[in-house]
Length: 472
Image (tube, rainbow, N blue to C red; front, side, top):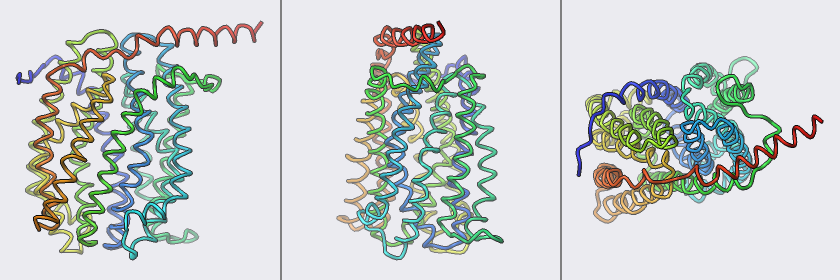
C-alpha cells in the first residue's frame, strides 16, 4: 500500500474550511451534550430514556440525511464546474425533497413512537419517559432536516462560517431553555425529560427559519426561489440515485446503533447509561474528524467538478494524515481522563462512572482508526460513490461489529465487556479495508454531473421562457 503523502499546499484550504465546520459540529453536538448535562441531574432512568431514544431519532433522521448528502455533492461539483444556474437548481430541488421527506417521516415517527420502543423491548421503567421524548423530537424533525440541508449547501459552496453563527446563538439559547422546560419556572410547568426535547425543537425551529431566510435572500452566492419549488422529476431522480444509497448507509448505521443499544440494555440500565454517556463523549472527541471530513468533501467535490482528479486525491490524502495524527492525541487524553469525563455528565453515580470509563478505555485507542473511516467515507460520497460507502458501512456494522458483540458478550460469556471489546476489533479491521479502497482510486472516475447537464439546462431554459411569456 502506498504511503499517504502530506501535501502542505492543501493544509491551508482544508483548515480554512474545516475549522468553521468543526466549530459548527462542536456547537451542534452541544445540543446533545447540554441535554446530557441537565438530564444527568434527573438520574439514571432519565439518562437511559434518552440513550434508548437516540438510536430511533438517528434512524429516522438518517432516512432524510442521504438526500442532503446527495444535494451537497451535486452542489459542490457544480460549484467546481462554475455552473451557477445548476447550483441554485440543485439546492432548490434538494430542499424540496428534504422537506417532503422530513414531513412524512415526522408524522410516521410521532404515531409509531410507542410501537418502536416496544419493538426495542425498552424497560417498562423508562418506556413512558422515552416515548414522550421521542414524540416531541419527531415534531421538530422538519426543522432539523432543513437546517442540516442549509449547512450542507453553505459548506458545499465554501461558506461554512454562516451556519456557525446561527448554531452558537441557538445552542446558547438551548442551554437556558433546557432547565426552564425540564424543572419549570413560574408559569412554565416542569416537563422533565420531555422538556429537553421541547427546548431542542424550539431552538432548531429558530435555526431553520434563519437558514431558509438566508437562502431565499440570495446574498451569499446561492439563491432559492419559491416559484422554482416545482418538482423537476428528472433531477430528483438524480438526487434519489445518489441519495438512496447514502440514506441506506446512514440507516444501516443507525439500526446497528439501535441493535447495539438493545443488546447493551439486556445487561441493565447501568450499562445503557454508561453506553449513552460514553457515546456522547465519543461524538465530541470525533468532532475534528467530522470537521475535516466536511472540508475534505467540499474540496474533493469541487476539484472533481472542475476535472482536477489529482488535486482531489491530494486533498483527501492530506485530510487522512491530519486526522490520524490529531486523533491519536485526543484518544490519549480521553483514555487518561475517562473517569473525570463520565463524572462531568453524571456526578453522583459511581457505578455508571466506573462502567462508562471502562468503555472509553476500549474506544479511545482506536479514535484515529475511526477518523480514517470517516474521512474516506466523505471522499467516496463527495465523488458520488455512495453505493460503495454504503457497502462499507453495512459490512462494518452488520458483518463485524454486531456479530462480534453478540458472540463475545453472550456466547463467550464476557458480558457487557464483550460489547465494549467489539468496538476496537471492528475499527481495526475496517480501517485497513477503507484505506485499501481509498488507494485503489476508483472513486476518482465517478461522473455525476456531465450526463444531466443538458436535461437541467433545458429545464432552466423552459422556466426562463415561461417567465418571459408571463411578462409579455
